[in-house]
Every structure is written in C-alpha cells, then in structure tokens.
Image (cartoon, rainbow, N blue to C red; front, side, top):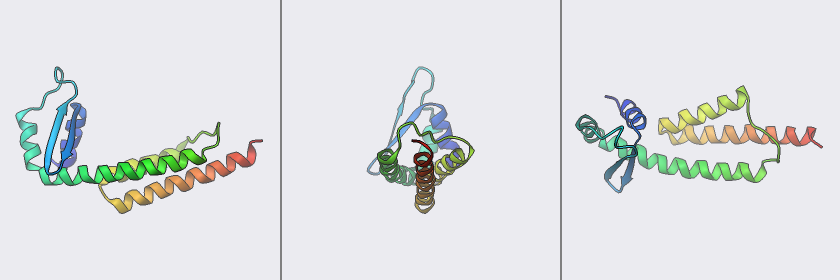
Length: 129
C-alpha cells in the first residue's frame, strides 16, 4: 500500500491520524463502523517516517491556509461570490498542493488563489454600486 492509499483508507474509514512529537496517534471516529485493523496498524508502522513528515507539513500548511483565509476575509466585499470554473480550478490546485506536501507548490497555490480573489473583489467593487 502506498502512502497516499493508506491516507485515503484512513480517511475513508474515518480514522483520524495525529502526530505527537515522534509518535503517531490515531482515533477511530466511528469505531462501531470502522476500526483500526491489524493490516492498517502494520501499514502505519511501515510508513511512520513519511506519515510524521506529512503530518508536520499539514500543521504548517494549515497555518498558511488560515493566514490566507483571514487575508481574504478582511478584504471580501459583502455579497461577492467566488465561484465558477476558474475559482474551482484554483481551489483544486490548492487541494492538490496540500496533498503533495510540497511547501513551494502550496505557497504558489495560495498566492494564485489570493490573486484570483483580489481581481474578483476589484471587479465586483467596480460594477457594484
């Protein structure tokens, strides 16, 4: 099982994975429906270094995304909607960048999203009385 397949399996099973220093912790959110199996535990052991690295990246990525979202919220004109294919492409690239664990790619995706939003906000203000 690849790391991505393992992450998808955990997500599908509603098993939350956390990092506590160099320890992986998990929680089955719906233990009656989905439990941590021995197979999954073995995969966690096999992929532990990569999982710890990915979780560390996600903590930093979450911080960067929250900062970006706060900047957008501060400038967001009331009544302006960000939607449609160009916005969806921007959001999809952001999602893919997050999953890639590549900080440079994530920063570029955040910057592209903020630039698209800023242009949309300017246009909205220009045409809205």
